Image 1 (cartoon, rainbow, N blue to C red):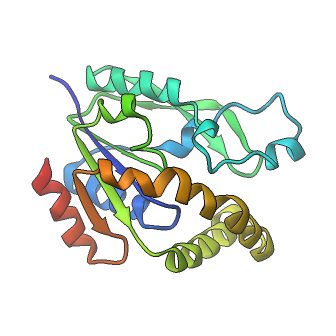
Image 2 (image 1 turned 90 degrees about the vertical axis):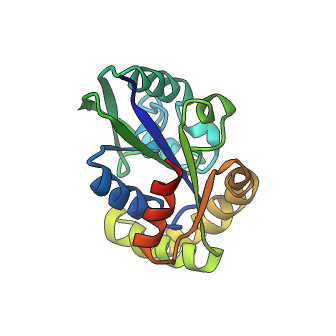
Image 3 (image 1 turned 90 degrees about the horizontal axis):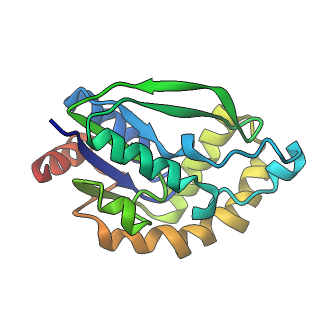
Length: 196
């Protein structure tokens, strides 16, 4: 028996992670965060890693992610990389993912690559205005990633917002289901479930 893959995309701060968690609870399914697949950067200094544009598709090891998704679809276990936002590098440990009836993948570029979209059974886009996304990103990055407000604002202005306009917002057209990131979460979950 194969695994049913649900892919959730949308701009940073739109509510992808929260929708994924709630959906995973309803389906008793694991969630894979695309953030785990940032490219290995140990060969760079910490300062060089910090200067990398993590808001463009090239920052993701899409080949490894595609291999893992293909294996998951076939019901095979995989080892999900662990990524450390403080050092901008992968950790030596990985997280085993056992076979499951359903797996949820969430991330900025979930709907960006055609080859990846072909592996997904249901495609979802979480839509939300830029001002709200920025406010959420600011709060999260200060709280969870140890960033300063100035650092978050600069990154959002120089890379997050322009890269979203270029690479993420256009992927909305590939979604089978589009939900609001500030809507009722239970209604968004039901909309996704109806499409599976």
